[in-house]
Length: 165
Length: 432
Ligand SMILES: Cc1cc2nc3c(=O)[nH]c(=O)nc-3n(C[C@H](O)[C@H](O)[C@H](O)COP(=O)(O)O)c2cc1C
Ligand code: SF4
Ligand code: FES
Image (cartoon, rainbow over all chains, first blue to last red; front, side):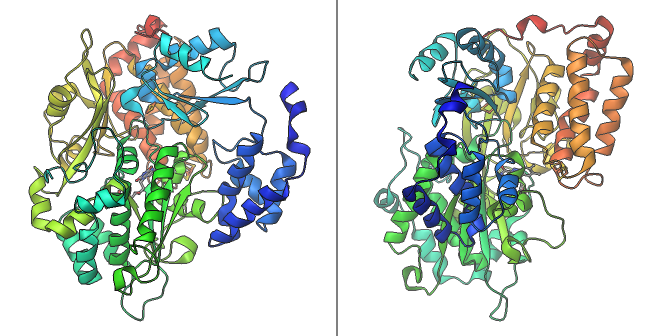
């Protein structure tokens, strides 16, 4: 709740961001084909896609908000709700399951008090499950924001979490 | 250059990709120069003769796929080449290596393949999480443009090509080739009905070819060295090497470029160093989550398309996952079916409703709440969710490990149900 209150998702997109979106749309063969790129630009700035921002991007791409939402909600990595400052993507697919994903999940629950889908009370971390990260030879694996980590064990997991404030 | 491992020959010990000057010094873009002196038909014929088969899971002949694109001066333009770099099949990590560490090989492969099918525009569709692949590809495209390998008149040949690198929003179904095209058009990415084949009507209704990363990376080597050389790399009837991977409780999990048809035993024992002490390998999924179990009695099989298929499984991505004796096979199946249920696009009812049902039953059996009839219900799903009953291959893929698991792990299923508990329960949350 506190995160939603702080969220700037109600403010209009500024001119610079609108220009960036217009540029990716120009580069695309058809404007709507720039949908995921445009949404990612907004998400990079605000952490997620608010209803207001969705509607603004849709207008720039000459789509209806419903059409763009149909795209946005389909993807696992386009967030339509606020997330914490850092997003932990913990792989829950099969090679990581074999190598101890459940242990990593339990340790995150013990250290941070969050289960998959939850955000810490201080807004520092959101934990999300993710499908196979293509890092199976270093299972168990996860990403924090855009950083990739593998060969997790108890000590390494703690040390990684410490890096993100 | 060690030419028995063409795909990985230029990989550096530190994992850093060669820049364009380094790649050229190592012989890069020579295959492109040669290709541009050939006719597109001659390239397709050579690729067909090399018996290169798709490395994305389907194993379709690349040359035959390309032949279906309408050619000739009166054929409609434009054409698209689309690289499937979605790599979200659980247990697969091979394309990542090629994208991150040999980006110029990827770009050269795209240019030559696009020339062969006379494509004007190419897309590389990369999964969202491969951020390093995305940045290295973007850089390689810019370098290639600056050197005249891309653009309006490539090396003075008259051939023109633009490459777009597209980052996905993240969803497994986007790897299905028709859903991938829908995703590129900026629509909700559902699979499309076939016919028409995308070679005739694909991206924006134009002739389009979708190929896997590893498949295409073979093409410059076939052009440069010829089909006979390529056939000689393999131990079986189909040509080339294969990026085999192995994950699970082995001593050295990893990825190796080996002759196509290397035996499963050799990969497990010699390359992966065998199982860690205290673990035994009971079975493997030979090529990702959508392939049927191969039991350890059969580990002498050559890992080629035909041999693995004869065992009732498939080569898939050739990235192998080991099930050891300390993990519960029912738990593994529950994990796999959770993935498929979650990633179903929801378009057709048998898959949308059937997969969550399968997952619930497996979870109940694992938790000790299973009933004898559950096994029949699971078996019924395996027989209904086939390619006749569902719209795309996601659901049939989901049934591959389940169908084989019901057969090979029957005793474990029955033990869970009779004892009302999971015999492996204690190991579930431990780091091991
Ligand atoms: C659900 C599903 C997911 C797929 N994911 C991928 C993928 O991530 N990468 C890939 O190359 N092929 C994937 N495929 C296979 C493609 O549909 C297609 O057959 C392949 O890209 C063709 O390339 P190839 O002939 O070079 O193998 C997937 C298929 C299905 C049904
Ligand atoms: S089989 Fe599943 S993934 Fe494929 S179209 Fe039907 S619902 Fe979608
Ligand atoms: S299963 Fe976790 S990285 Fe592949």
